Image (cartoon, rainbow over all chains, first blue to last red):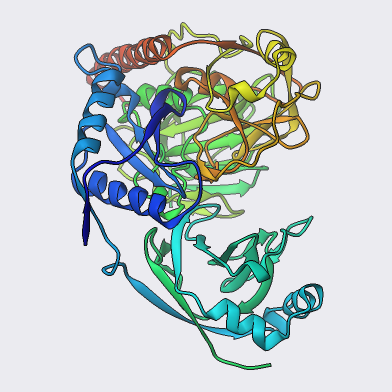
Length: 225
Length: 310
């Protein structure tokens, strides 16, 4: 744990019932560390009136109950002041304590149909693609899109691919790549990422996602091609 | 079994009022599209305001009541008929058992709510031949259809096109002309309008920049500018995060009005501020609570008077 005294931030309104705190201008691990640390801070010690928290790449959104905010003694400004005071408090940035998920992957085959295309377009041997994809320990930057869809970064630059022009049906456990991100589809859904493999790793338990923002993911290849 | 879904409609669900606290996991809160009408429906049968109830779109489902119960309808007028008799909106109604409820034609609005005293067991989309139970035994039952002699005095017009919005983080991306086109000019709701979002139909809006946005949170009412210059208002089943510019957000108090717009209906957006948004919301909530208080008094009165006769 290392301690950070201050966070750089900017607060803006997301409509009349949410505030977004932006901790930086780009996607990077340091900014996301701030997001996760502040997310945990607000989660562990809730402020009255705040009913939901949405951590994202570089921002944390606080959703509040407008009924509690539109009281004579408790306005939005009161809430903003409380949030700012909270942001003055130092928070621990968890680095080694983050939960690590080791996710076994079968690359290619019928559940990784885009792998040969990727190899062809990039001019990289398939086994080298597997090696490059499985090499890093990824960070779960955020969850979004559908319940439990984890945005993992950062993918090796050599593997960067744009999204498909039209979404296709995905099966649970499909491992895709888009830009400098990789991710796993937790349920049946349309999706535009290129699919390179598949995992049986449980991603939802009773409908609740297993992966959490701030967790780490390491892919374990089960096959060579 | 208390009722049976005889025929399914295009989109009928038992809805809650939004489950908060799971958006960090990518789980949207969901819930009713028109919180105002849903609250009124609950108030009329003496329920807590956020009791689970039926949300019905058109073409609507057909329901057979196997047990007698106290219901109310609020929101859109779909010409409700019970065994060939028309049912009015915004009144408590005793339904006799073995009666069939149908919705004949949409006259106004997009969504109607059906509340039952005590609420329903279960959640989610209705299936054909699904049997649904009531949560509680009905206080009082009636052998015949009985429409109460009073209705909720709703001082709020769902058919007005005026929708108030607060500027979004990326409002300045719209060039001046597009900002003018967005504000105060009628804009149509397109045919792509469902529980996830209502796409709007207008001249293409011009963006000053096409710089990519880092995905971040969106909300019920967020208006996104799509790459083709069109816009979408995110509704109850919106995703938790998005990467399109957020040009504005509909204020909470005007979401029910917007939810009741059908494809082809016009809306006129007006910019407003947080203070007004809060005041409008507080007024609307007070109005709902007034209706709830009066309804409760009248229901109590009715039960006392009729407990022996019925």
